Image 1 (cartoon, rainbow, N blue to C red):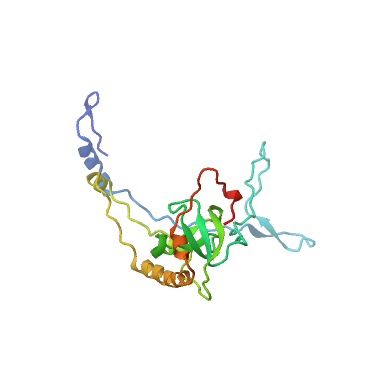
Image 2: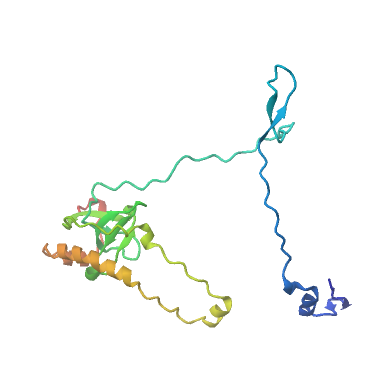
Length: 237
């Protein structure tokens, strides 16, 4: 391996690139395939002499330590609890009009469709009425009203699950590309045509049911808010 001899303190004979070239670092590290470790059994059979010793005996392959540690090593406690989806409130049934209390669409009124496996609620505006698309919301952040939309025998497509709302993996751009794109707005991705078709299919049934009730479309379009002296726990929705 070639070394860069110092001509003066802090000044080498070769530059960093020359020294790296002479050391052959560009060739990469040598890799050797290590043989796969063989699994040793926990016990081995040993022949034992004597008429009353049954001839053979199972002996552990690795002996236990003669001494115990001076201090007890704390073992992590194994939890037997498994997360379960939240139980749906009795006031929330398919077709119930909910008021969103948090998130981007807080204050909007939406129609509840079904509860997903994660416990989240699947709701829609509908999008054509108040601009709220198919979304998942936590039932802790909604107010269930007494207003209901009669959806009849309508069932949401089975493909609309929690995985349906997962974001696609995006490729990370290089540092050089980010440097030259600094200050420029990122290109907006087009909304998938498949999801747009699913939204229209769901809203078609919901809008038809909304139009059967007088002033229900105006009610869904209006946003919820409180004025001075109004308290939600004293209201009937």
